[in-house]
Each structure stands twice: as structure tokens, then as C-alpha cells.
Figure (tube, rainbow, N blue to C red):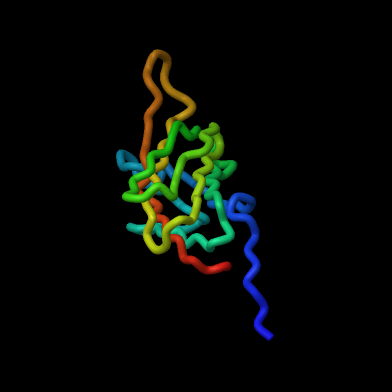
Length: 137
């Protein structure tokens, strides 16, 4: 007897991505962005169908130096939407209407400490790409 697939509500489970922004990687260069302790020229997050949110959280170390200031979605469909921007985390809703590549999320952070009278430095992430896998994993 075949058992029917049962899915948890798409809007209940978040995928958590821990983000470390290393501003000391090389003096005078842009920071290195580590997603769950990994960095690469292209980072892609495969999202199973039961996940309705992607939550990016600054690591404790990064939260001492940076705050999130925003996120931009680059996509040709409407699956991804910025739901919440707080100093230490950003939540992106994923309504799972499409499969395969559904967009790119550009995260922005700003430095907490600046010299008197100067504006905080801001940095944008190079990734990640988001792929809806259609799988229940």
C-alpha cells in the first residue's frame, strides 16, 4: 500500500543560515561572507518544499561589528519576499510556487562603530542563489 506524502505547512519551518562577515580577511578588501561556515564564488541554497522561510542570522562575532540594514531580491518570479529585517537577522519568505532557480538574495550590513561624524560603512553580499528543490527534505 502506497502512503500519501504528507507535507508540513510551508509557512512553519525556517531554514537557518548563520552568516559570518569577516572584515579582516585582507586589509583594504571587501569582507568575506561565510554562509554556515562556507564561502565560494557562488553559494546556492537548495530549499525543500516544507520550508517557507530562509532566516539569515549574524554569528555572535559578526553581530559585535555589523548590523543588517536590508535585503534585496533579484528574481523573475514572486516566490521570495523580504519579510523581516532586524539588526541581527533577516527573514525571507519563500512561497514555493516555482521549482529550480527562483532568485538571488543580496544582503546588506553596516558597521556598528564609526569615527565621530562619519557614516557607517556598508557592504553587500555576493550571494546566495536560491533553488526550490520540490523535495520534502
